[in-house]
Length: 484
RNA sequence: GACCCCAUCGUCUAGCGGUUAGGACACUGGCCUUUCAAGCCGGCAGCACGGGUUCGAAUCCCGUUGGGGUCGCCA
Image 1: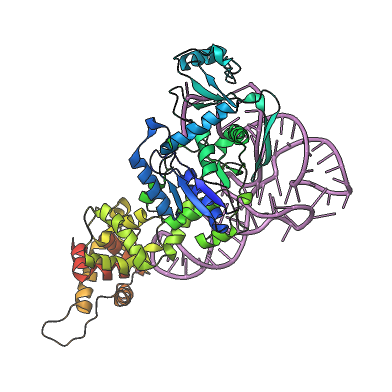
Image 2: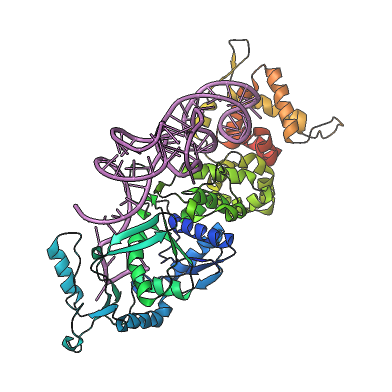
């Protein structure tokens, strides 16, 4: 039998990292076994149906590198089939018509005050001859009143629950036609011939209910794997949710994460393979197995995800990275980059990429290459701080030292108009040697000499190497900034 | 509250009856250095607790504690 897994989201917008991780694992498991990975959109709840959200979800999945082999674009479209199964369950006596209204049930629930209240429908064993005429009814599944329901889970082993703890679940709403989740999943998973159902642990209880439907229909039960949940950040309780922020794929995409970094991080969150940390998709396909997934819930560690992202940024080819980074720079400087500026960015990429953890950080670090910026606080201070002369009590003011530097630049780098005197090209190596030469001449430490220059050129004390930056900017712009 | 699941450094994990309990992130010391990174070398830090089982338990069993999930005519 061919392995077939699926991810079955009910999209409400950008994919939750937990859903994305579930998709990754399911995808890997299918690929590992040469099987099929399916995407099924669970849109049976029409009150929460947003087509745009579905598109966004698909985009997120694609971005992170998960491709589906099969698509069920709308579970809602399958409702006739769901109803048909519900009627079969009715015929088999595994389900019954329940004429109790939602209001009656809610009232009973309220009155009970116990959270563990189970609604006992008076219609469960009612004689059909007593059914009211022209009254709407829901269809409920008859759960056994004694014994246990048992399931096998790849991750957790055998799990069982007393049957009496389960309420007779509604499978068709009292509108007489709308199927409910626990019915639709079973029918679709069966019809699609899903062999492995791996979903969040929050579904564990549902699985017992669903087992009842499989059994009543005489269908084979798939293999189950209930995946541990990603928990709220340390100090906060509960599972990770929207209110903790930073939970959607879209968030990380906009923050400047590389898809392979987030893929790697999510892959490793709850699963490991020896001491391996950096794992490619191909390697993951070979190594991943649900049985190695940890059982306990875990916390999302942004620092680790960032460090992985920094790693993948460093590994990435400069040209590809430039293409990826360009939009982040454009957002930062609030205009498009020209072709020549893109070349500048490419040239600076080796210096930029070892210094950042995200593409947003890269745009912050490299923006000075394309626009002038207000000096940051520390840069401001540097320009006020005199430079000590080595082996002396004397000091030289930053502006004075910069003026001297400008003078030297015109000696070294400017082509003389009426002379054959040699001059240097404005390139990083030449700039570096000239800095060393000037520092020696002025009898100051090179680091001290360069700090104010760095401030004027890059507007910050934290920058890529100065010589490279100045080459990228060109002599004219550098002189202009130094004189400003 | 009831039912179910879970428990190795702060975090993510390796470990599957005999290990100096390993790695990664974070933190930290050093080297390198033109700021900041990167890189290299080093450090700190863990088997929740209590009982068993066993010659021997992080590993197996029970309990306690702690965390998580579920309790809808949502998915």
